[in-house]
Length: 349
Image 1 (spheres, helix red, strand yellow):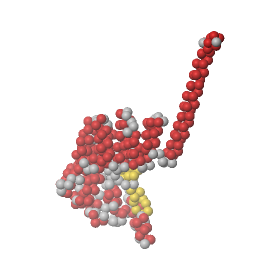
Image 2 (tube, helix red, strand yellow; image 1 turned 90 degrees about the vertical axis):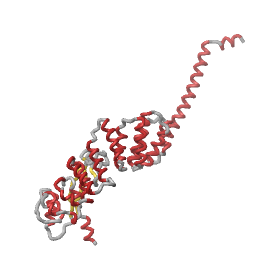
Image 3 (spheres, helix red, strand yellow; image 1 turned 120 degrees about the vertical axis):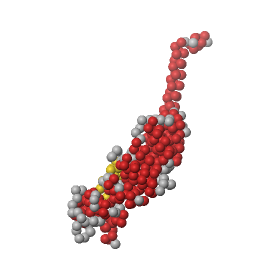
Image 4 (cartoon, helix red, strand yellow; image 1 turned 60 degrees about the vertical axis):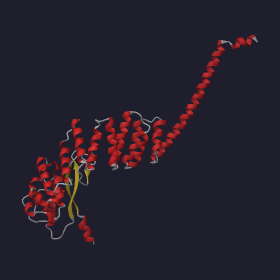
């Protein structure tokens, strides 16, 4: 009996037992962690397969972020694919779900910016404005929020609010001169109280100050005060608004005035409204004049494209703000010779 007690108390025996226990515990822990990791990888691959076929749900993003510690930037990158696909409602749902599980202020502000921008792209202007106003409550110098609010108020025709935002941007060191002229012009054009005559005078004063807004003013005159337009025809650079003049109705043209303007004279010779020139320095106009000199009508006309001089993107229609970079009145118009589909369709009837 004594020998058994001594053997049990042998230090070497205790060390063996101790390390055996450590090994057993380590093995069990390792096996359990390996099992969890295999299961996690299986679930993760399952989620990724769902993502690849476009079936990842909003809660899956939160699950990836909380359970698998997928980096926040990676989650945002995954969610942004919906925006690029034009699925704005899906992207909004993802951002809203993530907002409920993010506590870091910087990440929350980034999510709010993405949410506000997505609302904006989706056409939910009022919701977008609410989000950007919320951002400004805890980050009043957020330039991105201010710039989006400027555009939103412009689209909602709330020009006084737009001017307040321009004052804030100016205090942040941003040049707002062009935007102020632009908003001032829109405010006059959309004023429900001013008469067309009074608007014409105010717009003319702006035109003399800056040619930037000449397109907006020309469109207003040609719609509401044609006489004023032709009386001040020399104030406009028609190469900048060639598409407007090209599509002008025959009855709206003062041919006495255009006879004194070389560009307009060439333009309407190319269109076939008049025939007092044989050639033009403009290559496209010159070809159309030659075609118009034939006895039969040749199915050719002019088409226009608009190139942003800031981001260089090309657009098929004019917009006061570039849809890509959101800068104002940056489109340069370019005219090209194309087949006249209308003439072709008429000939088939």
